[in-house]
Amino acid sequence: MKKKVVSILLAAIVAAGAAGCGGSGGSDAKTGGNADVADGSEAGDEADAGGSRDAGTDADEGKVINIYSWNNEFSERLQAVYPQVKETSSDGTVTYLKDGTEIHWVINPNQDGVYQQKLDEALLNQADAAADDKVDIFLSETDYVFKYTDADADVAMPLTDLGIDPEKDLADQYEFTKVTASDVNGVQRGSTWQCCPGLLVYRRDIAEDVFGTDDPEKIGEKVKDWDTIKATAAELKEKGYYTFSSYADTFRLYGNSISQPWMSAGETVLKVDQKIMDWVSDSKEWLDAGYLNKTVKGQWNDDWNKAMSTESKVFAFLFPAWGIDFTLKPNWDGENGAWAVTNPPQEYNWGGSYIHACTGTDNPKHVKEIILALTADADNLAKISQDYSEFTNARSSMQEAAQNDDLYPSEFLGGQNAYKYFAPVAENIQMAPLSAYDQGCVELIQNAFSDYYQGQVDFDKAKANFETAIKERYPEITEIQWPE
Image 1 (cartoon, rainbow, N blue to C red):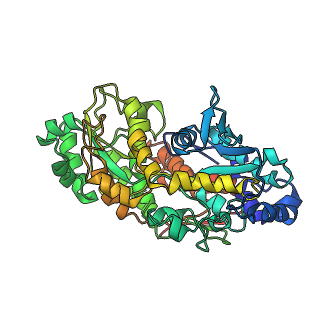
Image 2: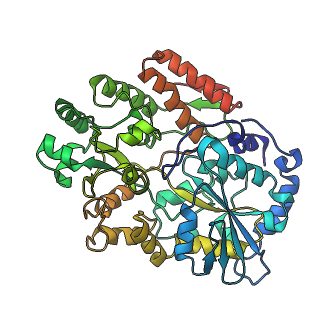
Image 3: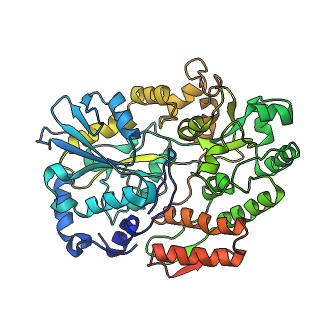
């Protein structure tokens, strides 16, 4: 493991922030850890020994599978569809398999960077850990997946080393999810059961009041692109409504459109894409025009949650399937059927939990089975969609779901089949180029310009504050380049 890679890998240990999937916060900087392990001398030998085993043989495996995650989402889905599950302990910390193997769930919260800190510490100790203490599977989110799929870091095994052929075994997955889980050489080092296309979710009563209809097709025409939705925002304002709750609500759409990574591998110059600055200028324009609620500062806070209540004047949110189920639904205090979905002003993806086989695992056969059961079995993915209202990573199943209103109605959405709108967005998602610095940049650029939006600092000071914050988190950054 190269020292620069270790610097990124340890980012969670000394920094904090908030972002994430499923309503959870997430965050991540300095080089640390045992020098021998960091340079890969001893770690590489043991990793090769564990990673090169044929996952399809009957070789003895460990009796404990350690899975690192930030919540119980993956645990619930594994218990629901993995056929080897026998039972799970009452406290949820251990799942017992039929062959006597135990899955130990190591759950640490994303908030304040705790999850990544604990995972990174375990990864740095992987080579010297006892067999039953080794990390076997760990999960990552889109915001920081690149950090763990880095080829030099080599903490996530290539799927081919497990005996999984992505071209054959994962052929039905959406291509952008496979690219997201791959290193810069195109080697896939993870897989996901999720696909997270985003939609516009709107209040039916507000639509009726302002536009005289709540029909998703007609509302879709009023939000079909940014120019159109700006005109629609003016109509909403005239009636006393906000289009979105916060400037943070639109960030993912702009962030998905960047043309270059925040910082390329091997470089020390961080480049802020023009699309990010478009978000800054457009957000300021929308705030000044009264299309956003100035009292809602960002996301994942009490004001943002209250903006989803019956007392709110907010017309719409931009959410993937998990956002509707894990965030909007719990914050809504009214009856089912009050919300509906339609197309967003542009296609975007938000989130995704990736499953990685950890280099050095002593359970490659079990790990292979789990990854295939959760991300490649069509019946299992269909069950996850039906039981958890998730848009899963199986193109054929999701296309079928989009056409089957009877099988996939949403009670929360008043019986609407949201897959009808999710499926076309998923087909057109083009993921922005990833880097190991994405999470820090996404968090800190929003924090810096939030102060600007609130009138606490001017534009140039916001830029300077971002430069200071990002260099503190990633000391290897020598320069920040802003678009002309």
